[in-house]
Image (cartoon, rainbow, N blue to C red; front, side, top):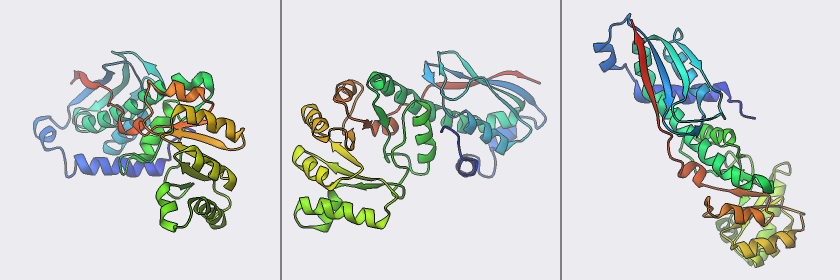
Length: 286
């Protein structure tokens, strides 16, 4: 589940190299002798869940296949401040040139994994799934959603192509009475592709009741108060997958999970995660 597609990963890494290194690292190449060898360590400066080790390794392989990148921990490992998560041996130029890109990937992805793990820990006793959203950095969604999985969460849809999610604006766009719009949208989605899950978003119990009648696979309870979520769970009777969403925080998630919803989606996993503090230090050079 947590494996990375090598072709997708290679494209992302190549774009990062082009963006940062371009025609070459003029500072490093001008001041560091070409044959200078070095050893370095990547160290975390705060407790975290590590994510992004395969990305950092591939990055250095792409820059210099002779560099020896040795990971000391696996993705998903909880580590404490001061832990060495990787050691590098080889060209000093290569180590310095790739430093910022490697740290950017590791810090960003570890931050997402760490925040996700905090949310997941608060719902584990209820068996509630933590889901991400499409609120991701353009071009980096694949890695950000990977980090969510590393942290103990699950992916919602990867994009607009792999799951139907009928939202309020879809219903408005087709016009007519809302109850009929709900049924029409779900019917059209199933005709378009009967093999893909259909989810519909509702904002209150009246809309929820209308959605239930149309028999979607999932219903998203958007920004509904906990009391209404409780009522929706009772009304559903386990016949449809229920997802709660909207403004969920670490302070409120446990109360929402107690209602019995199947999953809770949280945009903040990828929009509010703070990059984990890490550093790279040269330990030897010859």
